[in-house]
Image 1 (cartoon, rainbow, N blue to C red):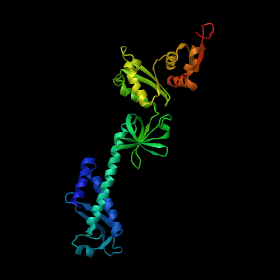
Image 2 (image 1 turned 90 degrees about the horizontal axis):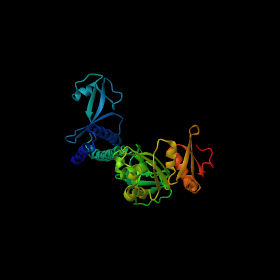
Image 3 (image 1 turned 90 degrees about the vertical axis):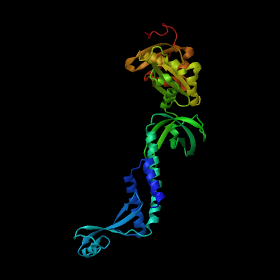
Image 4 (image 1 turned 60 degrees about the horizontal axis):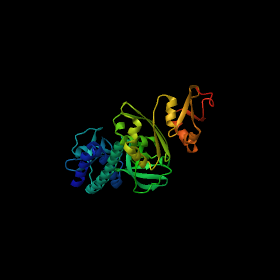
Length: 350
């Protein structure tokens, strides 16, 4: 091998963390294949690489026998001793068969191995970087479209935004930046496959974590997030500090924090509500922005009867039932909305 090839191999070992043994094994395998392709033969071949000089030696391994039946893998005792080997029948000898012009072939093979190992190292590096980002929110740029998939550039890696993870109301243009939730990272023969999402509830959770220091510090907790992506999200929060009002912390001064989240979600409406361990109160909060007059919890049916003023019923239910549906998903309770008039009009209350 030429000096520059040897230098490149040592640089790969040093910078990419690929051990000399792995490089040597890959080179030997590749050169063995190149030798057999060029010079033929099914004989037993051994290749040795001197990492100090770059010299390569190729040996054929033959068994010492009395009578040779296959000269490709056997040598007579007489011939072996004539070559200077002190052996007996049954021993093996290594005879150098390095072709004069093999240096050029070796250099070409080494270059191929360098490219291959660099690609493998890059793939492994990207995988190790992104496997730790699974479940996190990252920034990415729309790179290109492949059928219905969108390819997103995230740093030096390409991620896939599948149709199921795309928001129907959003328009994606090449070159635009978005925030994405990393759904999955897995190894494939072609390199790491990174799946990202714009619809996952984790995206909303991550955006609030970025915007709200109290969440980062563990003072305010997000207890639940449900979405109908592109339309509406409900987030329930709680505070571990009596002096910190969790909804206010998430909204921010003059709505600055929640506005940043809404802008990143391209105008998706967000209701931040107070979490409660009491089902009736939790459901009433979850129906925000509707005002609830009274609730009744039916434990055995896992249902919360919610009474609202007639003027609030459409708001409580929401367009196409969206508000009530999200409230039920957020709380885990069936929500039954009824008109509230007076105690006399609702004798089953209480």
